Amino acid sequence: MLLCLRIENFALIDQLELDFGAGLNVLTGETGAGKSIILDAIDAVLGGKVSSRVIRTGTSRAMVEATFTTNPPLAAWLTEQEIDLIDDNSVVISREITVSTSNIRSRSRVNGVLVNRQIMGGLRDRLVEITAQGQTVQVGQSAQVRDWLDMYGGDTLIQQRQHIGTAFSAYQQAHTNLEKRRTSERERLQQLDLLTYQVQELSTANLSDPQELEQLQQERERLNHVVDLQQMSYKVYQALYQTEDETLAVSDLLGDSEATLNDMVEYDGQLQPLLDLVRDAQTAITEVARQINTYGESLEADPQRLEEVEERIRELKQICRKYGPSLTEAIAYSEKIQAELAVLNDSEQSIESLEQQEKVCFDKLTQSCQKLTQLRQKTGATLESRLIAELKPLAMEKVKFQVEILPIVPTSAGADKITFMFSPNPGEPLQPLTEIASGGEMSRFLLALKACFNQADAAATLVFDEIDVGVSGRVAQAIAEKLHQLSQHHQVLCVTHQPLVAAMADKHFRVDKQTVTQGKGKKSNNGSSEQRTVVRVTNLDDLTTRREELAQLAGGKSASDAIAFAESLLTQAANHRQGQRS
Image 1 (cartoon, rainbow, N blue to C red):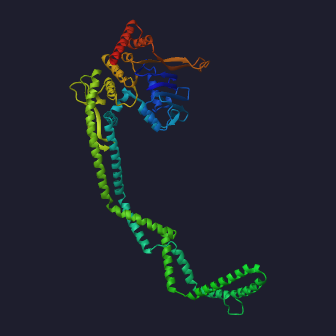
Image 2: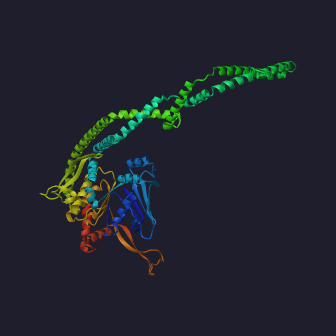
Image 3: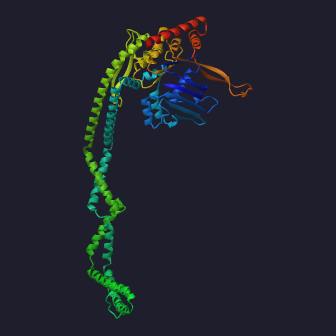
């Protein structure tokens, strides 16, 4: 329920604070007095579209703040959105709108937390629903009518729609996969040819060791320098172990050094470590000499092996240029394209499997849609009888109404086009509601529709903007009673010109325009004090002022007959409320 609405610099409102109550809250006033501005402010604070025109002339910032009561489901939803509760009873929503020379900006907060448009949309659905005669466009939209019918059908129907949403997503994905596969067939065949050639070439190359190229290059160097290596090996062997002239080899020198150190150790034991080092060196030199001699003797020229190595090196370098740049990367690429080739080969049969998969998904979607259609037909029949019953007290005793359900291509919301068919007069055929209903008939239809949704509506506050335009007399009284009926389960805010409706209010506000002098000592361009138009709202909380307002609505002036009529309306409304309570 909307507890309080605070408005600053919004359209013609400079500052305004309204405290609403439970039951039926009515706003009255002359045409153009600013009643709809208040409803526009409610719409704006709940995330509705705004333009720079909503900011009061001469200012750059507008602000609307609304305080609502909470309930356990709303509190749980706010907690899910990570919005802290101020207390257990209320939630405060504010929207600040600023304008500059280039653009308009707005920021919405819930309990002081900045929120985005998506959260505001979810909050709006849980708090307020606005109904106006201008909703004729919505009534003509199949999607909106479908949503109304599904909401009237309750959880079973909504859950079936959710099943369809899942089935439709699965079908769309299967269809997309199939179309993608079909359109890429030429590319697949081209890729298949390319990868087949590459895999064959890489397989023929027999790649296995990432170090093979480096090892072959080393082997080539060795085969190209066999003679040099033999000569150098023998030279090293002579230098280390055995010379052909009188020059002493390294091993001989170390032997002499070892003998000398051995004599020295007999006199000074501290030299023993040095002696050990020389002995170790002697052993190492001897081993090196042996191995280098064996290496040199094992070397021999092998022209055939050299040619084989050269050929393999050329082959591997060619592979690296095409698939490398290194042999490691070429091997990795080979493994990768083998896997890709396996997938492409498997895809030769994938069109048939994808077609089958698409058919299975479509069949599931169709079956779900058929079940939803059956539920809608059953719900439509219930709504037809219920709505006709709600319309009869609104001076539409002979009305005919039908929920027309026609098949369409399956969508995420089912396979039905839903239209409200209407005939207000006997003998006239059913036609789409938006094509045949007058303004007054549309007002009554919307009100009756809302009465049908009385128990299903999640919103605690229902707003009606001049829903009674175009009606009078007995019909206006019926509308007043219907609004009062709704107010037993919801808070109702209603903008009206009908004294019969206003008399039924639990709380009555009069809206009017006043001219005030803005700013102490402030002068206009011509030197006079600046006059500004503002909207003012008066809470008619006493019988006298309320009676006078009803008299104004009924007779245009507070004449005695108009006052008497207003008193009769108030008495009649009190009797109706008393009858409802009893």
